[in-house]
Image: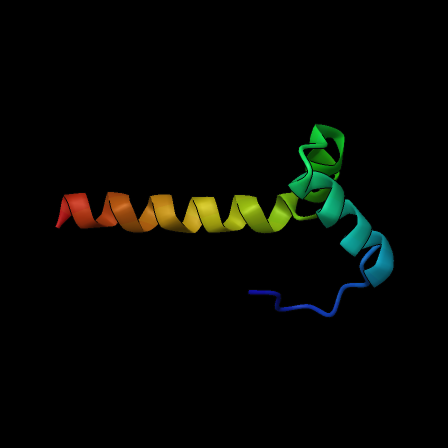
Amino acid sequence: MQDKNVETPISDNQFLNLLDSARSGNTTAMLQIISLYQEDIKSVYITTYMRMISGIRN
């Protein structure tokens, strides 16, 4: 999915800590993870939506 080599703003250990916190129900940690991948999430959503629309029109 990633075309460009982008540095993650947090280390692997920080990400794993966020992930553990999110799994434990920490909503702040989940929101931080979402914000890290917000652009990827948007692009997948848009691509899926466009495929759905083009299938309806055919």
